[in-house]
Every structure is written in C-alpha cells, then in structure tokens.
Amino acid sequence: MKTVQFILGRFLGAVATMFIGALAVFLVMQAAPGDPALAALGESATPEAVAAFRAERNLDAPLTEQFASWLQGVAQGDFGKSLTIAGGIPISELVVTRLPNTLFVGLYAIVFAVAVSLFMGSLAAIKRGRMSDTVATSISALGVSMPDFWLGYVLILVFALTLGWLPSYGFTSPFESLSGAFVTGLLPALAIAAPMAAVFARTLRTSLLENSGRDYVTVARSFGFSRPFVFEHYVFRNSIIPYIVIVGLQIRYLLGGVVVVERVFGVPGVGSLMVDAAFARDYPVVQACTIVFLTIVLSVNFTVDIICAALDPKRTR
Image 1 (tube, rainbow, N blue to C red):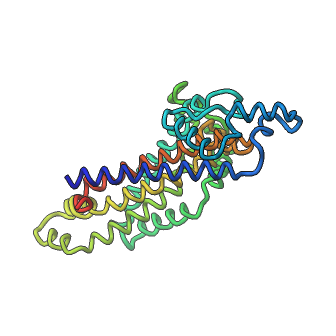
Image 2 (tube, rainbow, N blue to C red; image 1 turned 90 degrees about the vertical axis):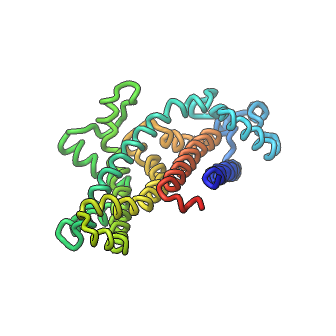
Image 3 (spheres, rainbow, N blue to C red; image 1 turned 30 degrees about the horizontal axis):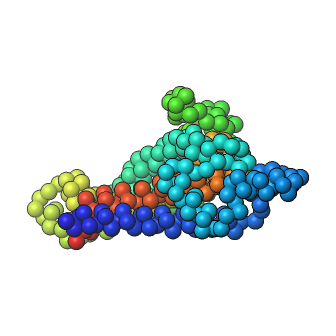
C-alpha cells in the first residue's frame, strides 16, 4: 500500500510540475519582445492583415483564455500551428518528425556515458591510489571541465577534418538507415556523453569508496567471502542507487546539450527546431518543444524514483 502511495505521490508531483512548467513557458513566451503576427507576416503587413491574423490565431483573446485553450490542445497532443518557420503546418507533425532524431542521439550519448563511467568509476575505486585511479580521475576532471559545444568542434577537427573518418555535418534519420544514424550520430553523441560520463564516474567512485568502508563489508570479508563477491553483492549494489539518481538528474543537462550540439552538427532534431523557432519568434513552436523536453525530464525522473524505490524499499516507508 505504501508503495502505491509512493508511486501515486510521485505521479501527482510530476503532473503538478508539468502544469507549473507549462504556465511558466506560456507566460515567458507572452512576455518575450516582438509581435508574433508581424514576425509571421513581415513588417510591411497592413494593419488589416495583422488584425485578421491575430483574430485567426486567437492572439487577441485574454491571456487566461489563450492559456486554457493552449493547455487543452496540449493535453490532446495538439500544439497548434507554426506561425513562421513552417507556416500553417501543425506543430505536432514537426515534433513527431524531429523527435526520433533527438531521442536517438540522446540515447546514444546515455549508453556511451553509462558504459564508460561504470568502467572508469569501478576501476578508480578498485585501484584507489594507484596509477589507474590517477588516470581515471584525471580524465574525469578533464571531462567535467569541457563544454559540450567546444568538445564538438574538437571532435569535428580531429575525426572529420583531419582523419576523415566521420562526417562533420548532417545526420541520417534512423528510419532511413540505422547504420547511417549510428555513423552520423557518433560525434554528436560523444560530445554530449563525455561531460556526463565524467560526472557519473566521479559519483560512482565516491559511492564505491564510501560503501567499501562500511561495517557490513568488513563483516562479510571476515566470513571469508572473496573480494569480487563482496564487491558485487555488498559494495556495488549499495553504490548503484546514488549513481542511478545522478544519471536521472543529468537528463536535464543532456537535453540542454542536445540543443547546442544539434546546431553544431546539423542534426534536425527538436533542439534545432526550437532554436530556429526562437530566432523566428515562432512562439507556439518554442512552447511545444519546451513542453516535449519537460515531459522527457519528468518521465525520466519518475522512472528513476521507481527504480530507486525498488532497489531500496526504505524509500517508500
């Protein structure tokens, strides 16, 4: 019963956060400078054309009515129509077309970051104080200090322009060619994954070292259990919870990195769509992209909470 209450509480919290986030995004877009009607029709548009456009898009209605109408559409998967960058096209179509590219690059980066950090973090903890620990810790510190966009340009310079192994710009959709998506998405994924892997590895190393000194570990060793057995069953299992939490928290930074890296590598994803819409003052598209990112973050955080509760039942008590 407490588990059900825990899950229900987390779900209601996510729904409340989604509503607050949607309201904040709407108000920020309304407060942004510029007239969407003039941005769509051009500065030379006649007052009559501007008035007709505003009436057609419900831009003259009170803010409460606009927000209620927009929120009702969002709940039904209808984000309205683009004002400028794809005039007249439903925004949901734009998002559905671009979202798979963003998710592919994001998941690609997550897999890289988790795989590398599990190896580096475990190695640094097991070999504490030795050369392996120093190397892994130094690489982690270097990874944390490198901005993803700067690393992206370095990767382009080395692997695309100098070695010629990978393309420097452009992306193949996984629906067109899965192998092409893996090749063209490799450098963007690496640029996003490197800083995250560094953070994950440092978190895992610290957690492993803390749990290695616990009393129950000493007791287990006194019973004659081997070091690999104790590490796997007592140290690693108790250390993985904070690791999972930090992976979930980093998703929000991953999405921020995706927005920048998509522009650097020319990936036609939701991030680049949002940047184009922001420059074109296409507010409905910006709002839709923000809601999509917010939904992804909240969904991941909700999943992480459930996983952590399953690994540590004390969280639901």
